[in-house]
Length: 218
Image 1: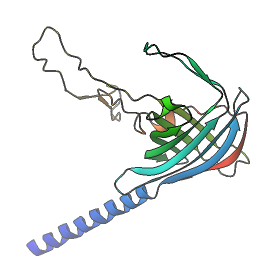
Image 2: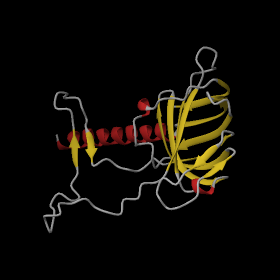
Image 3: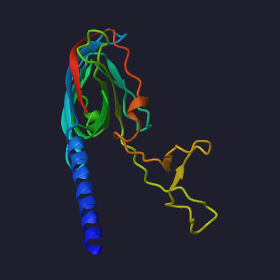
């Protein structure tokens, strides 16, 4: 009886390991790539070329080039005294470090490694795309953003307490009326990466004219 039980447990363990390996292989096989030239309401030509693929450890590798002919003004929003500067367009190169694929949609995150505007170097980028096949019925979609990394060099605490027991605590906020709500871990991470928002929450840019193709491999 003990021998049979051990054999059953061993078979179950091997099955779990095989399933875990398959899941890892499937995740590692996720990828996306594309090149797209387009314009929005402003009429200026924009172009992006990108590729990203997940690795076995859950990270991602890949890169993106993005250019925009529209004029852009860098303002002193932080009160540092820097002069306002206007550029006749810009370009950036990004190294990706994370990728999330959800069916025909994918979101990538990375850091600007080079740019015609030096202030952009080191900032974070999110690129979200949607693959709609051969584009004959519905065109492929995309949206993007460039963000300054959040630097939090202070910790909120109760000033009336020498030692605030709430500092460093984490909790899960859920909808009490929904049993299926997995909740959100609080405080939320301030990292600009693919976990920042669910893929389905991104609003895609309203493209007036576009040419190219985007491929997403789940």
